[in-house]
Image 1 (tube, rainbow, N blue to C red):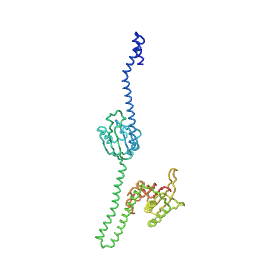
Image 2 (image 1 turned 180 degrees about the vertical axis):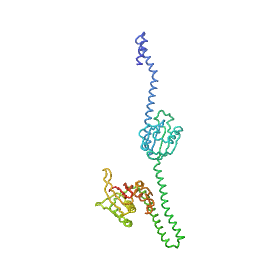
Image 3 (image 1 turned 60 degrees about the vertical axis):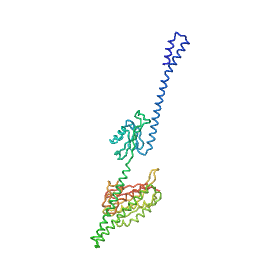
Image 4 (image 1 turned 90 degrees about the horizontal axis):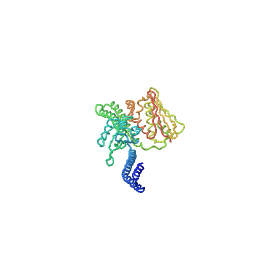
Length: 413
C-alpha cells in the first residue's frame, strides 16, 4: 500500500511533464525510498534472527539441564529467578512427591532454614551447604548443596525460565539408620558380654578368697560359672553367624534342598531337649517331596532356631507341643512357586505390639525370661537374614497365652 500511494503522488506531481519524464521521475523516487528503507528491514531481520537464536538456545538449554540432572543419582532441583521450580529429576519427584513444575519452591519444602539458604545464595551468588530434616511423609535426613548458576558471558536473566540456582540433595537417611544400628549393636553386644564376664570374675574372686576351702560353695559357683561361660559362647557363636550371613548376602543360593529330610534331621537333633521340657514334637510328614532352592546349612540353622524357640516357649501351664508341616503356595504365572514351612506351638505366645520388632538384633519380648532360658536376642535376627538371603519370607502370627505360628516361605525348585 505504501508503494501504491507513493506511485500515485509522484505521477500526479509530474502531470505537466511528458509521460516518459513522469515514468523516469516515478522510478527514481521509488528506488530512493527502497534504498532508504533497506537498513530498517535488515535491522528487523537481524532482530528476528537474534530472537529465534535465543529461543533455540533456551530450548537446547532446557534439554541439556534435563539430561544432566536425570543422570545424577540423587534428588536435584533447578530453580528460576523467582525461586520457581524449573526442573526436578525423577529422584526428586519421587521423594518430594512433585506433581508439576513451575511452582514456587516454598510449596514443596517449607522449612525456614532451607528457604533462607535459597535467598542467601540468590543474594550473595555463593555456594551454601545445610543439613535438612524432612519429617513428611517419612522422616529423611539430607545434606543440601545450593549453588548459583552463572550465565554465559555474564548475560542477564530475561525471564523466569532462566536457570538460576541448582539444589542438590544427598540423602543420608539410610546411612544414619545404619550408623544407629551399628552403635546399638555394639552397645547391646557389649552389655550382653559384660554381664556374664562380671559374674565369672566375681565367682573367681570368691573362690580365690573366702570360699577357697569351701567345697560346697566351690561346686555351686563352678556350676554357675559354666552356665555363664556357655552363655558367652552362644552369644559369640550367634555374632559370628550373623556376620557370616551378612557377608554372603550378595550371593544368591542355588542348591536344591530336600526340606523333608532337613526337617527330620532337625527333629532328631532337638528331640532330647523337647523330652527334657516335656514338649511333644509332631511332624506331619507329606506324601511327596518338597525341594526348595537354598543352602542346606543356612536353612538348617533357620529351622533349628525356630523349633528351638518353640520348645523353649512352647508350654503354657500344661502339656506342650510343637507341630511342623509343609504346604505349596500357588502364585500368579509370573511369580515363582513357594513352599511354606510352618512351626506352630501352644506356648505363652507373644503380645501383638512386640511382633514387628521380633527380628531386630537383641530385641526380646521378655528380657528376663529370654536370658533365663539362654537366649541371646539374635536367633530371629539371624533367621530373618537367612530367609531374606534366600529371597523368601518370614511371617509371624501369635496371640498371648494362645501360642505362636512361624511361617517360612521359600522358592520352590
